[in-house]
Image (tube, rainbow, N blue to C red; front, side, top):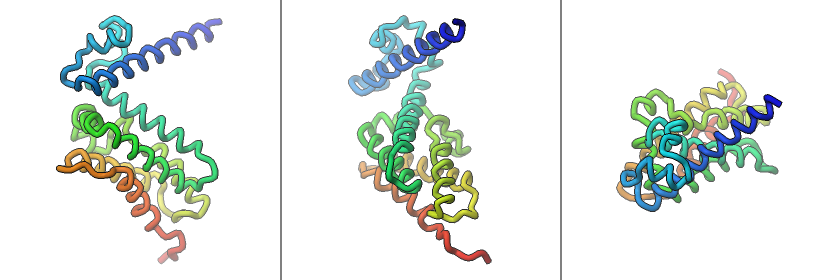
Length: 203
């Protein structure tokens, strides 16, 4: 009985957090980030203003959550793709992520300017924006299948891919003209992993 009550409580908390994030996203898109207040977000979500701070310490914090949620969603969807090699799934993750980010260029760039600090990026700590867990899993699968060099550290490869991916998003946000991001993200997978020949003999 206690477990059931706890489960319902956690479910209600998650539902309120999702309502707040959905309301914030709608307002950010319609009237801009700066013009949106915490009070407006709470009212759009049908919750009291004080409830907002039970889930997000600041308005900026909701930006990080939005980015984290999108990456988690795309990663889970790509892992479920059938009839694809591990490397194919990783390329799918990157393409789907790039396509999704392209739809919300201004908001994505705002997330990277306000939701993640420069020291965090330099330290390789982008919080929920990190691709490392998903990339590491798929790289291990690709190594077992002989798609890439089995002798290389999968976590190191995942960290390198993560750093390149974050760099590409920052460059995309700072570019004078918007260009397709999805192709660039798939390109870094090919550059880093397909260039690592599994048949190179040991020296």
